[in-house]
Amino acid sequence: MFIGEYEHTLDEKKRVSLPKTFRQGLGRKLVITRGLDNCLFAYSKSSWEKVAAKLDQLSFAQADTRGFNRFILSGAAEVEVDAAGRILIPEHQKEFAGLKKTVAFAGVSDRVEIWDKDRWTAYKSRIEKDADRLAEKLGEIGAL
Image 1 (spheres, rainbow, N blue to C red):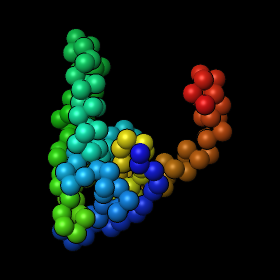
Image 2 (tube, rainbow, N blue to C red; image 1 turned 90 degrees about the vertical axis):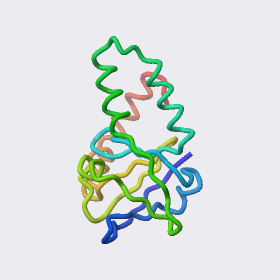
Image 3 (cartoon, rainbow, N blue to C red; image 1 turned 45 degrees about the horizontal axis):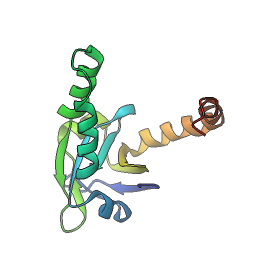
Image 4 (tube, rainbow, N blue to C red; image 1 turned 60 degrees about the horizontal axis):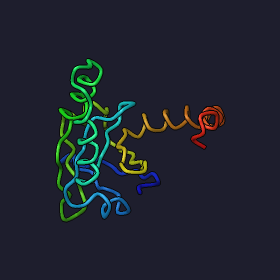
């Protein structure tokens, strides 16, 4: 399970160090794809296979399902962690997530989210202000 948040800087070659606490769980090869809220989702190969299998079970007859599958699957790329613990995020993914200089990594259960630091800060601020209402809503449906 991935938890916690970390910040790292893109280097001159546009590589970023994967936080050490996430490296073991993600492995030497991981899959990064477009995520929700304009961030990227990073999965270990085994977790990615589970996500892809779930998506594969959805009916392609539904337009929303086709669209979501295309969004997630066509945006995915396998990346390798180098000897220094860095990854090179594909250009199309950097553009999607608006990654500039500082990258925020957030551990979210089975995945690591990769955010532009400023977007992460703004998003986190909105969620923190709304946490009590969100908890109440989750409580109503029995999730908490």
